Amino acid sequence: METASDYGAFTEKFTLPPNSAPALPLKSLTFAVKEIFDTEGYVTGFGNPDWARTHPVATSTAPTALALLRAGATCVGKTVMDEMAYSINGENIHYGTPRNPCAPDRVPGGSSSGSAVAVGAKLVDFSLGTDTGGSVRVPASYCGIFGFRPSHGAVSESGVIPMSQSFDTVGWFARDPMILSRVGGVILQLPDVAPPIRPTSIIIAEDCFQLSSTPFDVVTGTVIKAVEKLYGGDVLKPEILGDYVKTNVPSLKHFMSKDNTDQIYNIPSLAALSSAMRLLQSAVKPDLGPGISERVSDALRTTGENIDICYSIKRELHDALSALLGDFGVLMIPTVPGPPPKLQTNTSDLEIFRARAFSLLSIAGVSGFCQVSIPLGMYNNLPLSISLVARHGADKFLLHLVESLYDSIEDRKQHIIEHKL
Image 1 (tube, helix red, strand yellow):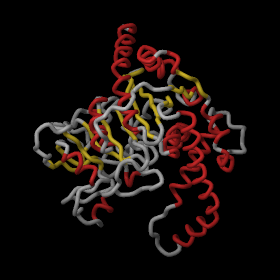
Image 2 (cartoon, one colour; image 1 turned 90 degrees about the vertical axis):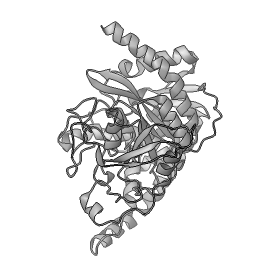
Image 3 (cartoon, one colour; image 1 turned 90 degrees about the horizontal axis):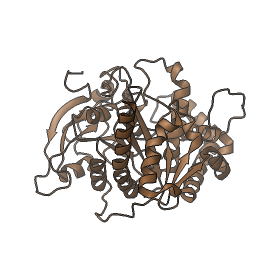
Image 4 (cartoon, helix red, strand yellow; image 1 turned 180 degrees about the vertical axis):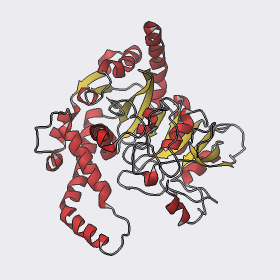
């Protein structure tokens, strides 16, 4: 339940003391963890009271959270999440919806809602979430903070309730790019040697920005000017990503809609990517009761061939985007297709928004690439963000790039604010 001071972000508050050795990278920082991570001595509730009631107390703490404690950070509690991580809205009927600190009448984004709100409301310095289909990137965007989804498989998921192991990642939130990067160094177990920061190309996916209700120049303008200032305009390259994906991921044709009568703008190849991702996510079923399990088995038998196609799509997209970006290129896309929806919006009214969101989110989701959502301040009193995507394994490069770029972005934002005044 929400108290006046905690924005409804927490399910439980406690203190896990840090390693007290001097000169640790996260010394004196506080963090919270999503209620999907095991914490020794506490039940991992998974956003659902029935789950919490029927599961035992955890006997060990998830290794990722332990690494943060060892690096000097203090854990101060567990955060609210969407029930069983099945939504990107951030609403939970059992524990209440954490209050979006940027826009109180809007959803905070999910499923790592409480973790994002705790950071956005300055209750902690950083927090842990998970991102399968968008559950770090979306709430980061909605709450006006940084959110990092690492390369698939780069961070241990031990001690974390699995959702869909083809896509599951452990991600994190911060208000400050330096803290985002320091936390990344610990979680990713990276050496302290800095990689080359200068990107070889920054590819602007122009068609993806047409999915957004926010004007192209508003979303991209500050970032493009910051890139030009730091690296020169020659690194910026436009791309119609949907066409590139359609050409270079041939297995997607099995999921492409035959119906071209849709009057609403979408990107067919990315919509197909999203469909393939959903099918692969739903293919792994939990133990089910008699009758239901037989029907599910029948359904899976009929889609077995499609599952193989999904794995082909994953491989093809990984290879196609690797060729597009090279070692040190990045892809610029909107994190989400617009500002956070109002609280308690009818789900049917959100169908187009959700479809567009998953088209964007499935780019990193299916390829396994790393992605960072970067806050760009407010537009029409609502939070604005942009995302950069880098190849699988380029996490440290992407974290350093954000640090370098953000100072220039901040300068540009200040200039725009002054200009508007």
